[in-house]
Image (tube, rainbow, N blue to C red; front, side, top):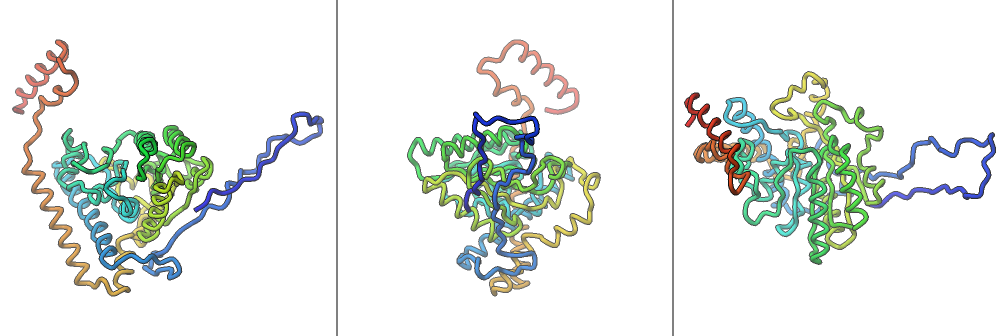
Length: 385
């Protein structure tokens, strides 16, 4: 991965421009150079032997199970939400390779700053599924990461977590630690000013940060083509002076290899990298969304054939690491784990409505006390204790 070169055209300040001289503004699109594209495993499960990484069989099966578990969790959460037992959440169905691959090379000392569609990565980093269920059900104790897990709580405000991630990376530099930070954000967040500021700070200070732009094609209902004139979002890295690469985000091997190289660069003091992971949101933006209103279902079916889990299972089967029996066994085991997490979540104490007033002030103001009493009175009228 290298920073593309750009040719500079300079004009002397003493040059006299005659009325017949063409405009000094060149309207030709800026050439940001060649953006490298990486795919190792195609949609048919066929591998490029020249690029195939040397991961152990155990590691490959571990990654496969993590992807299957992420989808099992997603599916279970969807069922719970439709039953009225879970809050609104953002499914990551179809993005499992992108999500798992970006944290596969992180150590416990490294940091991860997730967006709100990162279940699989969070589970792999040490979050229990019942913890994540508690989070999405609206319990305040669901947001802090588990003890010993160097993750930020995910951010609902689009792109707001990217700047703090760079701050963590700069803190690592200050403390002379050879660790790194991985932060992800969506194609929609790439249009946020905070993300550009984060890229600029990281590039200038050579912060050990790996930016993962998850380009799933849709910023809620806005397609990429309508929010940016340059749909190659990896070019944002080149524009800010950092190495960048465009990766098939449904190819788990490519995601793992690209992120591994980027994290090693970061730890070695070579600065940040931007990875654009091209993937697709096969499900809803959130459970409050109806994507049939704004996108063609034929497009969804096309991407279903590129399913990252199916692709990886085909590859592992060809390697002799999986067969139909092992696939069914993995699916059943992951489903069982998700159900156990659901049951553990249901067994947790219910929310206490009065707690929403308890964490704002050390000493509650009189007007807030009055609001609290009115709120509780109305709850009692409705039979809520």
